[in-house]
Length: 91
Image (tube, rainbow, N blue to C red; front, side, top):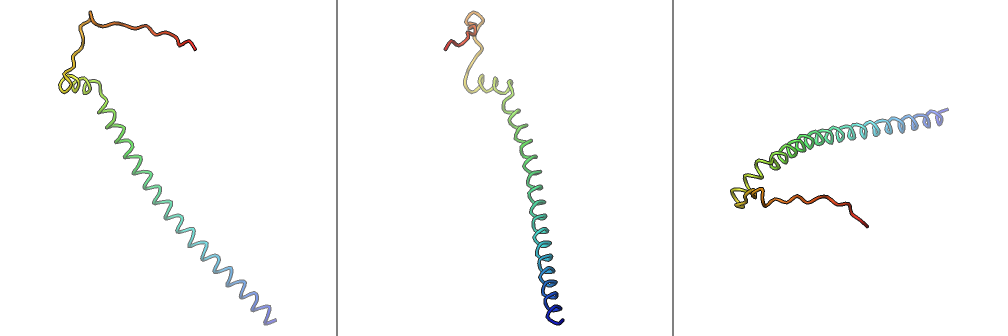
């Protein structure tokens, strides 16, 4: 009877240690998940800011201003503009 009680006690202690270990691992993983979710939110905000910045840099008026001021480019007169028709590619 004592051996049976000791065996059951050992099994109980083993189960308790396994429970504590699994709960500790679950808490660690939950903390890691929250850190990753915070990083995801930060990266989402940064992505939005970068998209806004890109749209600002690519505005037609800004590009035209830089072309005119820094590159000394001008719009050609209408007599010099030629329209090239699109042709289908023949393989």
